[in-house]
Every structure is written in C-alpha cells, then in structure tokens.
Image 1: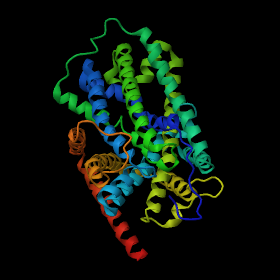
Image 2: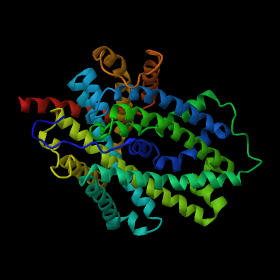
Image 3: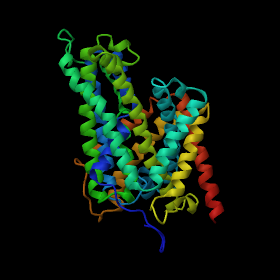
Image 4: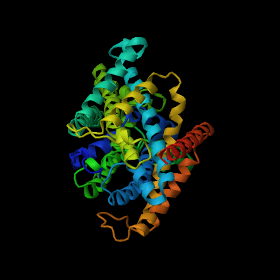
Length: 428
C-alpha cells in the first residue's frame, strides 16, 4: 500500500473480529423498537417480513462478498466504486458514506445519552448530556488511536455484551409463550409486506462496516466474504427469534413504544425491563465503537486515493493506526452530536447506504470485465441474475425516499462534487 519509507497499517483483524464488526453494525438500537412497528403493519404475519428483508439483504451481501474478495485495501464501497467507475463516482460514494457515518455517530450518541438517562437522569439533558457524549466518544477514540487490536477487542466485547441481553430475552421468553397467541406463520397482505420489509431492510444494514478496514484484515479476500455471509445468517435467525418471542409474550405488542422492555418486564418482572434498557445502552455504545473503527478508514482510504489531503492518510509510527483520520472523525462526531439541528442531516444516511449498495452491486459485472484474470475467492452464482436483482431491489427502496431525504442528499452530493473539483484544481 503506502509510499516507500512510510509506516503501514498492520493486519490484526481476524475472522471472528471481522464477523463481530458486521454483526455489530447490523444489530443496533432499532431492534429494540422494530418488533412493535412490524407487528402494527402485519399483525401475526410479522415474521414473513423478516424473511423477505433478510433474503433481500442476502442478495446485496452476495454482491459485496464477490467484490470484496478482489481487494485487500481499505475503503469498502468507496474503493469498489473508484475501481469500477472512476475517481469522481468513487469520491461521491466515499463522501456520502463519510457524512452518513458522522451523522449516525451523532444520532447514536444522543440515543446513548437518552438510554443512560434511565439510570442517571442527568445524562440525558444539559451539561450531563454534553459530558456523557464527549466522554464516550473520547474513550473510543483513545482505544482506536492506540491500535486496531484494541479497537477490535473492544468491538468484540461490546458486540457480545449487547447480544447477551437479547439472547437471554429470547431463551427466557420461549418458556413464557402465550399458548392462545395467534399462529406465527400466516400469509401476509402483499402491500403490508412490502411496507414492513422496506422498514426492516435498514435493520439488516450495517454489514458494510466489515468491508471498510480491508488493509488491517488478515487474509481479507477470503475472510471478508465468510464474515459477511456468516453475519447475515446469524442476524436473520436472531431477528426472527426476537420477533417470535415478542409477539408470543406481549399481546399489546403493536401498540408498545418499548416492545422488548415491555415484554421482558411481563415475564421477568422489573429486572427484565432494566436488563433490556441496559442492553440498549450497550447496543448504542457498541455501534459507536464500530463507527469509530470504520469512519476513520473511509477518510484514510480517500486520502490514500489522493482525493483528500495526504496528511489525513498519515499512519502513527508506533501504534500503526490512521491517527489523523481517527482524531478528525472524533472531532466531527462530537460536533455533529452537539449541534442541535443535526437531525435534519441524518436524512442522508438512508440514501447514502442505498447508493453504496447500488454502486457495489453494479460493480460486480464491471469488475468481472475489468479484472478477468484476478483470483476470485468467491463468485456470485447465477451469472448476472443476483446482481440485477440486488440493483432492482436497491432502486425500489430508493423510490421510497421522502422528498426531504432526496433534497438534502442531492445538496450533499453537489457539495461533494464541489469539494472534488476544487481539491483537484488545488492539487494541480
């Protein structure tokens, strides 16, 4: 990778840690509220939406697995788009990914403060909120600054920690299922199924976290596809079981604002509610841990591609981490979290994710043509069938964007184009 005489990143992320990054990105705080929203749309047929969304996400992940198996560098969808479609398209994908990750970090940090407010009310408001958010991001920054090993160890710990309460909820809840509940497997209304699946497809998003730090992954061309496929299989089954227990133990699921906590309190008492609230705190912390691992690598990859100032691509001579990119990501993350109107910027997150999905799926046939001799550890079966289906699915989802999301995202992409061309002129 890097230029001569320059410190290089070290390959320290193994298969388990890589899978944990993907799972951590997918299982976020949304799963604590989604069971009620899906039940409200589909009623007893809610499980069908998880299967449909999981299948749809699986098609996209298959495309990611093939393209990721061609590269051993950092950047993920940014790198793939640049290789397939050129520097401008690559920059736009990287730009949107970067801003989406920063606004996500801000949103999740505020959710973390709100959940923590259950245990310490001062954490959710005023100076306490500022202290909690700044302190949490600072701790994660220091950990990732001092080495990718520490960052992945903490990510592994937080992933296991946030899965544990949910796993306990599933196992304990199976013993308290209401025998008079409606059948779990019923035929859904097609229109309602589409609406619920559209909602859930984003709950399966976040797997792309695993493809970004390619330069620090051990055997990335082999391990990234394995991690992606393992993560989607695990999360799909896990989500189905969570929904199954929630609708089998909480009759008023569709109207509950806190479905998992309410169901847990119903069969475990007050301890159950506390357990699931603690799980939400761990979930938001875990997702921010993954974001602090991934976001700097997007900046680093764009600097390595000479599309951002080279100083951002500096590697610490001792810790072998992209320390400038890490510090910048933390600073912007805190600033976004403190900005009271940042929520409007979060509208770009959904479209940015869809654009990265579409670009990667479209890159499959392009890179097959551009890199015919490249060794492929994984290839999508069925020729062009799956890439076409994945692109069609992404377009279908994109059509569900609101006018506000489209306006903000279009403005963001125009701003990205200006940054691209201005920096190009400055370099010349």
